[in-house]
Structure formats: structure tokens, C-alpha cells
Length: 354
Image 1 (tube, rainbow, N blue to C red):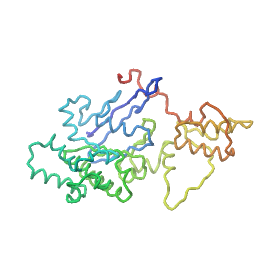
Image 2 (spheres, one colour; image 1 turned 180 degrees about the vertical axis):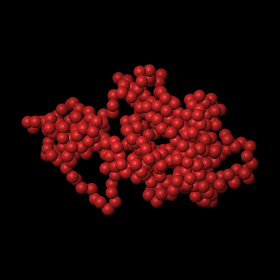
Image 3 (cartoon, helix red, strand yellow; image 1 turned 120 degrees about the vertical axis):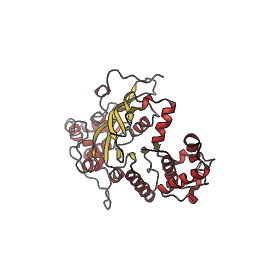
Image 4 (tube, rainbow, N blue to C red; image 1 turned 30 degrees about the vertical axis):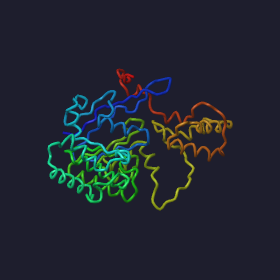
């Protein structure tokens, strides 16, 4: 039986613009996280990774679907039940600096846990418990206890937060971009710590946009795009033999050591949801010098994904960088837009009340 199960979870946010409308952040996401397993949740910015973590931690309510822990829907928990849930499911987030109050010593995060979960533990037993948690994350108590946040490195702050989670009977750890703000040497220490915790039976959801880190630490990998899972499986298979065009595009964008970037004019680039060759289609559909107009259309996209930039770069190299004024979307933009909402969402979904 899985420790944590995400079943057909969708989340809609109401747009903040005056026109209103609904913005889908998650589209029928389903997966299971088992004891002693690390799952990497990978996708570019805005793909819904953090939203999934917040739904699991019940910081955000899903619009539809359910998250179950040990067979119980977490939406059914009362306040007391939710407190017990957080004893077993904890999160560590991207920015360790914002997790501390700068006017208090950093180890105050331990005292907050003690007040809620261990009010009757003696001082001696509590100190032993803290030392054991710090030892598990390879921290020397003398180096971190009694210090203010600004006196600790980012790696020390992040490991203190992991130690705080370990003070509880934690079974699931949501690690949301926990190493993206750390330097390279500290990253390896935190990654190795996660592997060590996995071997002790902890289930970890490792949220990242860095494919190399996901490959290093995880047993299974989920590739997320526009809030929907496009590929999921054993990490070795996903990275070694990707089946989806988007996964292949992400892997092709990873820099290679000892190789400098070189511009290579592209042929047909499979970036559309159906795998169509967008760059070639634009050129072929633009006779009589209209390729310049297609290029300008690609240049006026407000929010451009990596794959759009690749196509646009190729168009400029082949058309001489010409521009023309236009206001309509390019074929590149249309091909890379998320699928229509009705393709993913059941009819009964409604936005949260204002």
C-alpha cells in the first residue's frame, strides 16, 4: 500500500485580470509515493510543481480529485487530525532564509515543534532528540545552536529545516527546490542526505527544474508540463529512453560538461503537442516573403518557453532577422499553448468562491 496517493487532482485559479476567467494550474495529476522512495517532479517554471506540493501539504485545496495518506483523504481531517497529519508529512521549501525570523535564534524552529508536539518531554530528553536530528543531517550542534540566521550558511539553514522535520515521526518529505539556492558543494551534501534518509524509509517528493539533480537522487521521475503529467516512469528509463517530445526537448537543453554552446541551424523541430515540426511549417506556409511576418509574430509572444526561443532563433538565422509589425499569435505560440481546459477538466469543476 502506498504511503501517499495523489488521485486525479486538478486545480483552477481565478484569473486576477479584470476579465476574470479560470487558469488551470493542475490537470488530473495522479501518482503514488511509496515508503523509501524518491520521486522527482520535473518541469519548467509555471508547470505546477509547487502547486502539487502545496496540495499535498494542504496549503491549497484542490478543485477536484483527492490526496490520501495511509488510505485517508486529507481533506477530511479536522484541525486535530491535520496536526497529526503534519507529524508525518512535512515540507521544506526553496528559500531557507524566509523560513526564519531574523530577530530570533535559528534553533527556535525546534522549540515551536516542541510546544505543539512534545510539551511534556523533559529538557534532557529534548536535547538528546535535537542532537540526534542534527547528527542525521550531519550538523555539529555547537556550530548551529544558539546562532542567528544571518550567522549560518544557506546549507546549514536548509539542513536545520530538514532536522526539524526529522524531530517528528515524518514519513513523507516534500522537498520543493530545496537546493536551488545553494552552492554546488553544498548541493551535493544535501542530495546525499536525501539519499541517506530514503534508505531509512522516508518517502520524498523531490521538486526540481534541474534534470541532472533529479536523475542523481530519484527512483522514479514525473515530467510535468502545463499542469499535466506528460511522462512518468523509472528514472533510468525516462532519461535513457524518453517517449514524449517535451521530455526530449528538456534533455536536449541540458548543458554538457567540456562542451561550449554552438549554434546549429535547426530543421523541423518537434515542439507541438502532436509532435509536428513547427519551424518548417512556418517557413513552408509563408510564400512570397511572408516568412518575415511569421518571424515577427514569433517575436511578439509575451511569455516564451525555451522551445519557442529555439524556433524563433532558427527562423531569424534563416530569414536574416527581418521583422514586420503584426498583432496575431504565431504558429509557434499556438502549437506550444497548453491544451484547452475542457480536454482535461470534467464539466462539474468550478472556481473557488471569491
